[in-house]
Amino acid sequence: MSCDFNKKELIDFLSSQKGDLIKLLNLIKDIDFKNHITFSKNVFIPLTEVCKNDCGYCSFKKDPNNENTIILKNKEEILELLKEAEKHGCKEAMFAFGEDADYDPDVKKALNNLGYSNMVEYIYDVCRLTLDETTLLPHTNGGNFSYDALEKLKAVNVSMGLMLENSSTRLMNTVAHKNSPGKDPKIRLKTIANAGKLRIPYTTGILIGIGETHEEIIDSLIAIKNLYDEYGHIQEIIVQNFTPVSGIEMEKYPEPSLFDMIRVVSIAKLIFKDTDVSIQVPPNLNLDSSQIFLLCGCDDWGGISPLTKDYVNPDSPWPELYYLEKLTNDAGFKLKERLAIYEKYINKEWLNKELLDKINKF
Image (cartoon, rainbow, N blue to C red; front, side, top):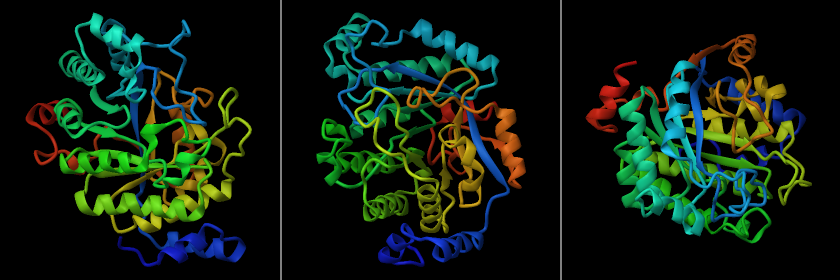
């Protein structure tokens, strides 16, 4: 990792107060900022809400025995949503689903009834449907995938993503991840590395407030930076704050403070300052404080849907685009729409001819 500060100094910044916090912000001020803040207008489609993991903070996973749970969204429903998304001017189709959902007998049966043996086959065909029948660009985020699965999905996705969340194995013994084998950081780091080997433009990030230490935050950011240095495939880093909601195991856990987030976003900017990796902070989780992150190095709002809710954070609605633009302009920046793939990756090194031709139609 290339950085002007050693690990101890970065850890100390996470405890900074008063003068030291101002010093940190002054360091950020001296970095060249982009004049625009980007976002992607998308439609968020969960293919299933079943997941083998059971994270203490998750409000996405649903009980497969609940009649309201999405066991497997069918292609007719998906295409109808995609067509509606086109009418709203969306360019990204963001497909999400619980990790290894096909471990569940109900999901497996639903797949088999449609002629599929696993979720990878299904999501491939869903992305193929998207490319063949709509103008939207697929982006898949469905947890860990094998190398072979990533290679298959690369052909029909302009980008993919997986939150590292944290690189600490210690968290596997805490309420956050004790029932979530897929959150083993060794597995997740391998998935992200394999995406790099396959030249897949990638989104990853960290989750703040799930019981991690300051050192573990720095270790996680450094781990991501090391992967970027090796493969160059990481287009954005999400710094996401834990937000407690009713019904989850961690509903009484405190969420990170505003200063916690300011420190982490600023340090992420310091670590990635010599790269073109974007720093993203979800605006729907921080609407009242979102502008301050623009002054700390955040330069992307992520996916914003005018049509569907944030199924990962269902109690936090997306801001209206006119309001997001108002906040962005008020902070001295301009709002700019982007695709699910960043511009530097739109070439034959990263995409096949079909995907390049699709993008060039915009």
